[in-house]
Length: 369
Image (cartoon, rainbow, N blue to C red; front, side, top):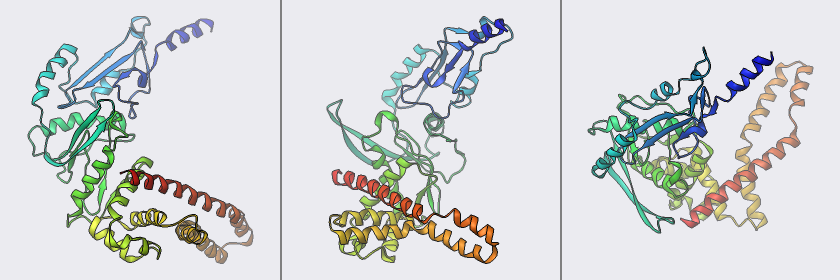
């Protein structure tokens, strides 16, 4: 037994955290084929992309491998797993990879230029110009480029998957990533700004450019997202409020009269915004138009938002009314015990305060835009 423990300790030395080993230098890898890899000491996974054409260098390095010291023990096959993600044609030799840099000067973005804007870079001490392009598979060389580009989704977006390149319904918006689209309604599938460029406003520029592109499309009913993240919702709030604030129906006078059909109709017809998102925009803009230091205005706003938040609780009450007609007394008692009105009021107030906090952050960003 003592001998076995000694062997186990020796083998444990060959376990590596691949998130520490991989040398992307862009952040944590989400769709990691091996979170913990067995069989290596001093593991390094080198993965490099040339900025323009995304030519790739991939190499696995290590100080020693378990196969070299233990019979009948195999190391995890890291290379095969990663080769399933990156397309063929990558370099394994650094000199070959560096030689490709000479071709980088001739690289031109694929597709049609939609939008150009500048962001001041503090480190560089100057304004840097960025562009957003729309491309499709008809562009010569774009399919091969896309096969390299889509690998970033696997490194940075949890549960990401590759799309069907033969499906002609996809549109591609290029700004360090791809943004596929569907019709009626239109869904954001995946959106990524690489870590070195996050926090500089690129996400808002990209979101607004894509949204504006589809606003005039007669085949698009509204624009939404599949299972949006918290950060995506914050970004969407900012952009949609920015777009809606100048519509006549969202004037301060109208906002104080409450949410109405005119707001829903105008937001949907002019900006392709659905009812749920329009309601959220209304609440944010009404908060801006409300003097929260005025007790009457603050109370009116609070009740207006809470009436919407009460939806799930009212549904529970309707279900309870049905239960009264069909449950036995002891079963009904069990259900009633699960409903704590004081707890519901507390949860409702917490939800309201959290929303107001989120809305204030949107308004603060809007004021600085």
